[in-house]
Every structure is written in structure tokens, then in C-alpha cells.
Length: 448
Image: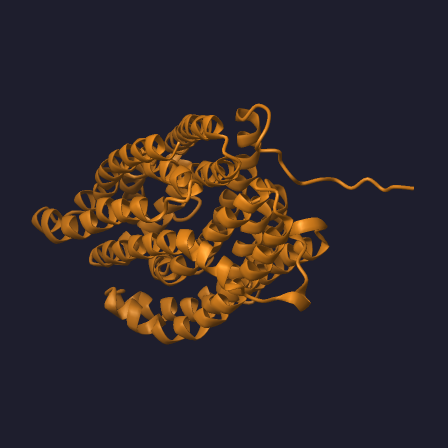
């Protein structure tokens, strides 16, 4: 008797696209939003039950963590594109070998990052002019956090492998389970055990171990081309090169992007711990707005890579239109929701009036205009799905990163205020979005 098993694969090459794209992107967005909600729980717990300094210490680490992790995380995007292309070409052998290579790369990258992170934690935070009343707590949090990096890398690559065939539901399940554990442990370590940032950092490590273990289990239990055998782990040069060709430029973009954010964080630090705490509270909402954009950008990568690999160029063009309209519309709706309830939402993190004022400014000028990121993220995702990765990376580096560094060194120095500083974000998004969308139409005409 045959036993029917549920298929997690999405047919991206045939039939209507809009609903499939929406159902693919929705779990991605929910995954990231849930992850951010769980991170927000870290901040809310230390902010309400420890101190504003503890909250600032956790928030001050966002930029340096992204700076160090971004390069390797970009490789997971390369794995998604490579495996998606092989699936589109119906080449099971190459698909399976690419899966084995991708998973091996994740393990190696994660193990490399642990000693690097431990070594640079204090120097990096000192270089960023982290206030003295926050520095020691920030160093402690960052060093414990880096113990979770190998598991974060395994989850990111494992999720990219599953998404390559259209499965964005099981990565979501991994985050739901690990996130609930994270929140429970936050409350236990901080409220019951009387710990501070060390408690939420330990909870983060444990929750990431769970998500990495779950995604690995799903891959081992996969049948067919995406099956992972831990006894066959190896890296083939052919697939490493293909993943690096797409992933390294994306990782470089993320790394340089994070570098500019480190500079901006240093400028924020000059306003003191209240500004850091307020920025941290406000960032939670703009991150969730961005996750909508990012989910449709990932959908653009995956759907474009399969259809481009199959030579279905008309569908590639429709993918761009659908992901752009859906992504921008839903991002704007979520931004307005947060703005209308801003008073209630911010007080979940703090009741300090000065901290709240900084958070309000951040939400007004950044969260409300987050749709600007969609113009370059989604069009860049479509380009990477076609195998064009370096040109959008270069444009994004100059439009967002180099411009921001120049802005901080000139305009911010001239008009030294928190408002003048955060305006760098929407201005850079407008510049970068115009450039990358223009590039997309030029390359689409050339390649299709």
C-alpha cells in the first residue's frame, strides 16, 4: 500500500503567479516578524525588568553583529539561487550536490565566526564610542551572542535550501518553536534568576540551537534531490563558485551596508544612552516593515531563478511586477498601523519620556518611509534571480552606504541633531531605488 506524503514543493513554472508568490512570501515575512518580536521580547524584558542601560546595551549590538555576519549570510542567498536554478532545470544530481555543499559551507562559516566575534567584540564597541555606562553590558551580550552564530548559519542555509523549492512554511515553524522558547527563557533568566543582558543572550543561544536542529532534521528527512546525508558532507568547487558568484556580492553589500550603519550608530551613541535606547525601541517597528519588503525580495529571487533557468522570461517579468506591488503595498499598510498605535507600542519597551521622544522621531522619519527599501531590494532580487549580482551590489553600496558616510561627515556635522541624522535613511533609499530599478530594466531588456 502506498503512503501519501505531503509535498512542500511549489510549482513556480506553471499556472498563476500572484497567489503562489503571496503564499510563499507570507511565511517568510511572518518568520522574520516573529523573530523580531522575539528579539523585541529581549529588549522589553531587560527594558522593563532590568534597566534602560541594559536595553541600550542589547540595542547597541545590532550594527556590529550584522557587520560580521552579513558577508557569510549573503552566501545563503547564493545557495538559494543555485539550487533554485538546478530545480528549474530538473537536474536532481546537481541539486543534491549543491545542497550538500551549501550545508557544509554553513558549518564552516559558523565555526570561523565564533573566534572572530569573540576577539573583536570589545574593540568594535569601543571604536563605536559606546557610552561607558553601557559598554561592559554590551561586550558581555555580544560575546555570548557569538556562541549562537554557528547555529544561526545552519538555520539560514537550511532555510535557503528549503525555500529554493518553494517551502517557506517549515522555516517558519522552526522560528515559532525556537521563538517561544526564547521568550520563556528570557522571562525565566531575567525575572526569576535576576540576570540582565547575559540572561537574554543565553536564551538567544539556546533558541538558535533549537531552530538549527529542526531545519537540519527536515533536510535529513527530505526525499529526492533535497535530501541531506550528514555522511556525505563535502564542498564541490563548481557549486562553491556558483554560490559565491551570487552570494558574495550580496554578502559584501550587506557588510558594507552594516559598516555604514556602524558609523550611524556611532553618531547615535554621541547623544547618550537615552538616544540608543529610543533608537532601539523605534527600530523594532522599521525592522518588521522591512521584513515585508525582504520577504517579497526573496520571493523575487526564488521565482525568477526557477523561471529564468527554464527560459520562461514572460513569467520573470510578471514576478517583478507582482512582488513590487504586493511588497510595497503591505509594507505601507504595516507602517501606518505602527504609526497610528505608536504611543502604546513604544511604551511596551520603556516609560522614560526622553527615550520615548527619540523613538517617536525614529518612527516618523524611518519606519513610515520604509517602502523606499522595496525599490532596490525587490528589483535587486529579480536581478540576482537572473544571475546578475555584482551590478546591483555596486549601486547599493554607493547609493546607500557611501552616500550615508558622506552625509554623516558633512550634513550631520553641519546640522548636529538626531532628526538630521535619521533623515539619511529615506534620502539614501530614494537614490538607491532609482538607480537599481533603472538597472533592472536595462538588464531585463538585454537578457530577455
